[in-house]
Image 1 (cartoon, helix red, strand yellow):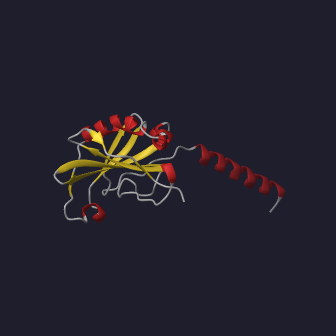
Image 2 (cartoon, rainbow, N blue to C red; image 1 turned 135 degrees about the horizontal axis):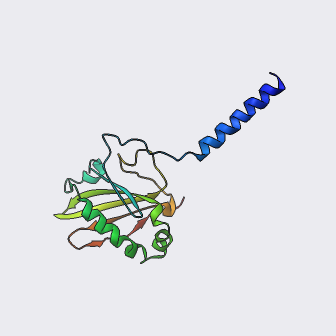
Image 3 (cartoon, rainbow, N blue to C red; image 1 turned 135 degrees about the vertical axis):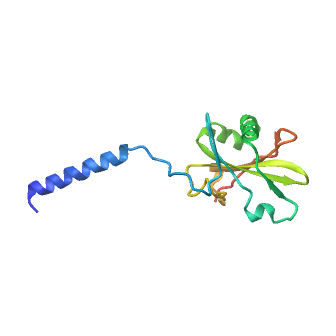
Amino acid sequence: MTRDTRRSTAALLVTLALASTSCKKREPPPSKNSGERVMATDVDGVILPATSTWFLADGKTTAWAPPRAEVLRAEAALPALLGRSVRGMAIKGRLPSYKRQYVGLVRDGQKVVYLNAFCGDEPGWTEHLVSVSDGGDCYFQTEWRVEQGAFAELHVNGSS
């Protein structure tokens, strides 16, 4: 390879590297298995069907499809829940960066919306529930009690 060819090759590689880092990340098209997306100011989430067996394993829990309006009602109350604890306060300031998953469950005749939240993108998060051991305050869960219009306690993952 001549010196000019090497320079041209190096220039091309630098150009390609710069072009690829300046491109916006594109969301893949939704899969037919994806749940209903919920996107609003500071909210990026998905309503998943309650098909995970661990939700329904007790034989007493059934599934329901929470309407978007109920999910947004829960989202409106979420900052107040986070403001009640030190660990929640650490999350509250970064809340817009968390992805959310919502699953409708009926336990003892009471409708709840299970909220699973995590920072960053997880593969397949619009199709199946993300479950992580540890991870610290990058992962948290709670349940919205529909009839009471209130959250149960906040669960923040531990650190390894």
